[in-house]
Length: 152
Image 1 (cartoon, one colour):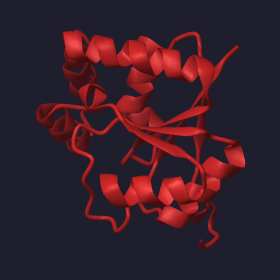
Image 2: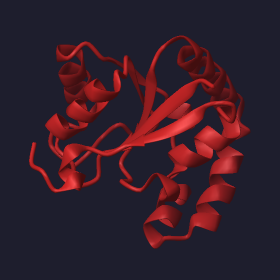
Image 3: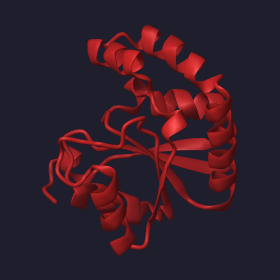
Image 4: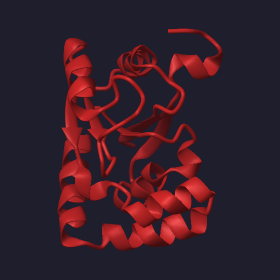
């Protein structure tokens, strides 16, 4: 069975995320945030892509697979049912379907991890994305070292 990895960077450092990705042998980080910006240092698109490049991991942004604003608001409220419904609609858009096909092809050839902010994959759209567009892939949720009580 092919595998897709996922990782959330909530409460993590870039070093912790890089360590988790390199330990898992990830070759490509698929950023599935609609807006690849972050208040957390190092997690905005350009800085993250540069840090990944330094450890030999390719960065690829899949904007159409991100959660629209109303879905992000539902996630912040903890309304997973609303998030799931909103995100299902997002995945029906032609650009999301095309991006999903590209992600599927990439994950069939390379070791790919899906990145989003939410630490808990069960509460994040990256799990909904996996279930909808990559169902034949086993999902492995990576945990940055900070979440295990160590510092990075």
